[in-house]
Image 1: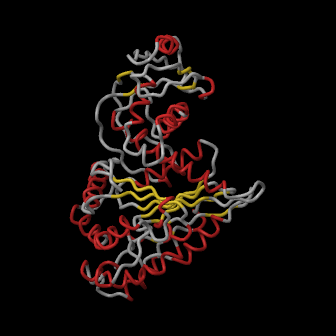
Image 2: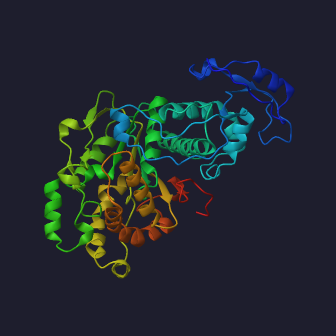
Image 3: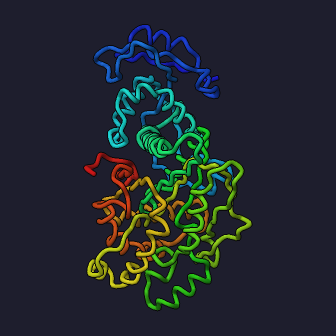
Length: 431
């Protein structure tokens, strides 16, 4: 049992502080078994005053910066043990009041429609979600760095709450007794920016809170090795289509088949297999995994989390793509078919925005260096540069429209744009 040695907060009333310090909280227990009453607060406090009590759990956090969260594959989460991606060191203990202040200072609070009152009323839920994410990443919730705390309470949980709101609105459109299709939420974000880890965390929270979810990546829909060979032969000399990645290198029929089946997974007992792609096959050129290795999911689904670096891209005038790179002209033409294969299935969108596409190179280089230092195969610096160079033209051509107009077919009422810095952390943005 973990005993919290909570420090008194100057804005808390004596009754709250005494109640707080007299409780030993078992963090392995359910939140319903370890609730503490939040009594009234002074006017100087940022947390709203309540005449009735709310429930919460004390927590403590380490006040030191840390290295940033590295990408965790969803497939590894589904198939293998979880592992920590954060360092841990001794923590400085604080109170629920401090956590409330920290949450409300986050850059996404207003963007996801949160208010101080709403945060206060649901503080026990925030603590539960935080505890679950700590378990996911094998963190000791009593020993979090500032960076870890920010990643959980300024990023993952606010986005999860936004997704919950989107799901609630989606489900409210159906009558009692009707079979409700899952909401498909699209995540459009550049490579290396942390979208896979974000989806990983959201998927885990949905599972932990009793909702059924499925995760799909555009990578799952790459052409087979034979299909890639035919694509290269049909486009000799086009470096952008020499390897998988750009528009034209995906099996759009498989996309339509899979996404259609997912939104029809509305009844209990209905099952389907999700396609998966093996990037290591054929010396790294990749191939579709054998269907016997595809994961099986069962309905009814609540939500589908669909992520990819080029989700929501739409064709632009030919003169635009030619000015960026003449090789993009065929890719721009290929992109015309992608709305019907991908984007029309997505009803809510999360766009992770970056200021400079060159960050993709730095992020990829960091990942490869880390792999090499860990003794695993990794690309050389020159190979990383060559790899990223095949994607940068598309970023330069399509990101401006994505950021100014939103994804192809998106509704501004169901679009969350999150601008991140070079450290992959959300920042306050004008969008």
